[in-house]
Structure formats: structure tokens, C-alpha cells
Image (cartoon, rainbow, N blue to C red; front, side):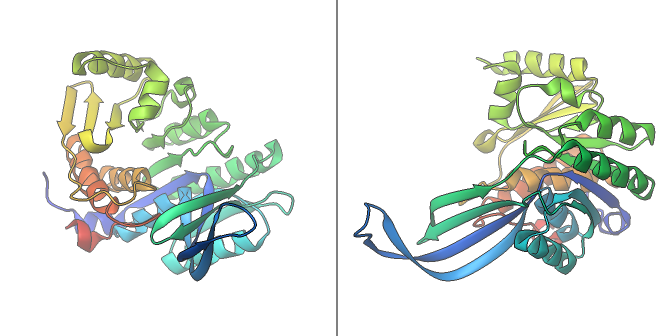
Length: 309
């Protein structure tokens, strides 16, 4: 694996576009069952808010020492205020389109003894006018960045992802996509797409051997005109497909505590390393190392430059 390009990373500028969320955690103790219904009573002792979705990708980019700009859609509510506060605190440039009629995507998790007991989601897909406003924002930002990351959590911000890919490619910028759903034709023309194992199966069907996976992956890569396709496979590691063939790296996690947000960390690391000019095989190895670290943490987390090196 190549050396960690610390100085080059400090100069890189990554534009992240996608579904911005707030991850809210309520931690507590469970000591009894409710007399009203057969559910645990959680006595909340600690509350914590973290950036989620595309905002977590941006947070990981900054933690690695690079510069991140975030474009997305939020409401004009308490969650949006908290998102903006956390972005400013992290040193992320925010270009968020807001609308009082659109709720900020919020995932609220209740945990007892470090176990997730309940998750409540508040979300709504943005309307066409909001998307048009966001696209206009992105158009003004492209010239100031080295690479574009599209973080798709199927909340509607990347409903017209084709428009964003063509805008970025017209400027000669690499586009890295974390996909959702089964219609991968939407991502045609991107540079790299990073499905996890289940997302890949949604797109191409189940495979019965490594050779069959190779065949499916290379066919998908060719069909979508991608430079690279990276399949993240949890405990099986990661497999990269390019015109040069396949490259595989085994998983590095010592202890898997929580996989939420791990894909964000992998995507962020790939984007930062690629922006420095590093080749895909080495970028994958750094991303694999970062993913192995972050799954040992609770909830949506980041990997810092110090941890990675």
C-alpha cells in the first residue's frame, strides 16, 4: 500500500452532494417494563446529535485532513439549525437549500445499555423547485473542487442524479457514487460506484461463485461506462473491478460493533485518496483500513487521519 499523502490531502477539495440528515441518539438505562404496554422504559441520561447521510461523508473527509463542501436540502426547523451548527463546528462549507415546508431528515435512535431499542425517522422527499435550486448551487461550486461525491440515501435529493453526473463530467471532475435501489442506469457516466453486497445483489441478482460475481460486475461496469466499480462485502472485504480486471482486499475489522455509517467512511476515504491522484487499488486499501476502524465505534462516526496512519 502506498504512503499516506498527508500534504496532498490538505490541498484537496471535495464537493459532497446528497441526502443530508441529522442522527439523534438518546442513551439511557432500562430497568423496568412499562405498566401501560409490554415495552421497556428508558430513562434517558445522555443525548447526542451527529451529522448523518451525506453530511457524515463530508465530516469524514474533513477528519482525514481534506477540505469538504456540502450541498443538499434541509428544512427551517430545529434539526436544520443543529445540522448547520455541527457543520460549522466540523469546518465543513455548507451550501444547503432550505424550505420551511420541507422537514429536515432526522433519524432518532433510542439506546439502552448500548443496544438500539427504537429508531424513529422524520423525512419527506424534496419537490422539484428545491432540487432545481440545489442544482443551481452545485453548478457554481464545481470549478472550486477536485472531485465530486454523490451520497444517495434514497431520500430524494439525488432524484435527478443524471443531471449532477453530467454537470461534473462536463467540468472534467471524477464522480464517486454511493448508490441506492436497483436502477443503476441512473448512475451511467460516473467514475466509480460503490455498492455494498446487498445493493449489488439488488442491481445484478445473486451470484453463486466469485467468477459469476466477476462477470456480473464487469458487465455492469461496461454498461454504465464506469472507470471502476467497488463492491464492499462486509466480513469478505472489498473487491474492485476496473478495465485491468479485479483486485481484492480482505476485511480488516478486529471487532465489529456498529456498521452504521461505515459506507460513508469508505466513500470519503476513496474520494480523498483519489483526489490526490492515487490509483484505485491503493485508494481501496486505505478505504478498507478506514472501514475496519469505524465499525468498532458506536453509531455514525469518523476515522481521523491519526487513527488511519
